[in-house]
Length: 137
Image (tube, rainbow, N blue to C red):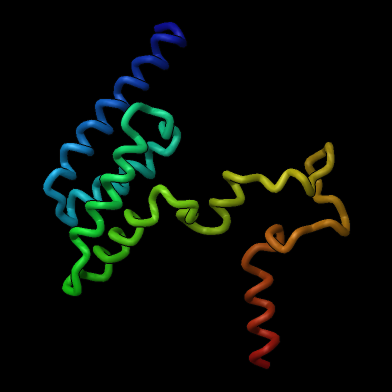
């Protein structure tokens, strides 16, 4: 299969998956919400596919309709993750964010951090851990 044919096949498959997920959210339940959130996390490379943006908006609206006081803790977590889709709120840990958003303006031509010019983001979670450990002592 040629590269272009392979790309087109994957693009078509992603658009079909998006359409199927959108249909499943017509009458949303927590289970459909969880399936949609996990699928979208796996399909984050297809954000330019047809219908992706509309699906995100539909997902956020569906999350609002299933939000109740009686949700289990895990279900509430997925509902909150569904609401955060479409915003600039990063999903996952800081390490995942760093892997996807390389802080390259502080790296020299060899990929080494330039001495004396590290930003607070490049220190990661250690800054907060050190701060709270020092203030507790």
